Each structure stands twice: as C-alpha cells, then as structure tokens.
Image 1: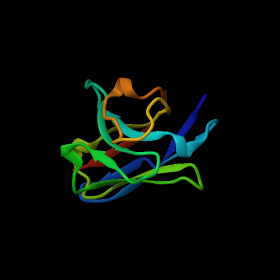
Image 2: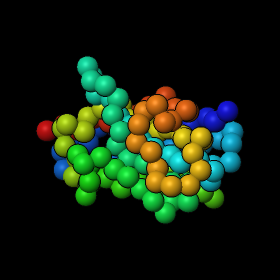
Image 3: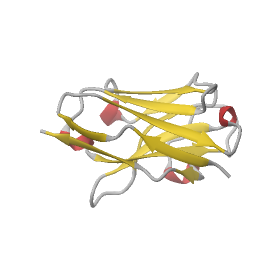
Image 4: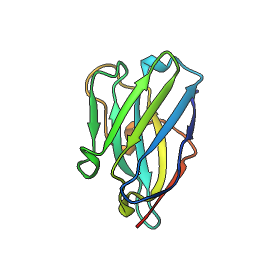
Length: 127
C-alpha cells in the first residue's frame, strides 16, 4: 500500500506560480515512478508530468512544457510540481500518482499505468 498526500494548491493570478508537493508513505519511495495528473470540471483526468524513480528522466505534457517542472527528493519521500506562468486553463484538481509496477525506463504517462492516487489539491488561476 502507498499513501499519497498532496499540498500546495490554492488561488493564484494568471502569470503567477505555485509549487505542489506530494508526500508518500507506505512503500520505498525511491522504487516508484511518480506522476502528476489534473482534472478540470467536466473533463477527463489528464497527464501533466512524470518522473522516474531516480529523478533522472522526466516526461511532461506539451501544454505545460517550459512552464511546469517535476522533481523529487527521495530522502524526504516528496515529489514536487513547480508551476510557473500559470494560465486560466491550468485550473483543475491536481492529483499525485505512484507507478509501482515498472522498473527502469522512462516514466509512463497513462492514467492506467498508475496504481495509487492521492486525493487531489485544487489549483485555481484567475484571469
């Protein structure tokens, strides 16, 4: 079992920044790839960014490239999502997820690839 708790969401003006955190427990954190997804009202949950177990490889959605950065601190069991130049279309609930079934390689981007999820944190960007 893996428990994931997100924090850092809130209300921010367009062009601003937020940093989301996800703290993991219950399993060796460094053995898991981690991802961030988001879900806006009336839309499906979509991939945002992912990072390999070592932090050496990352993936991100085209819509956030150059603005969002995923990172992790394996000593603290935390994965971060630094979000800069926020836009109104970034408004969504952001979810942290763990992929415990893959070893090595690039972090995966599909929702079904991730087997543990946090409860989500709301990010609202006002224009």
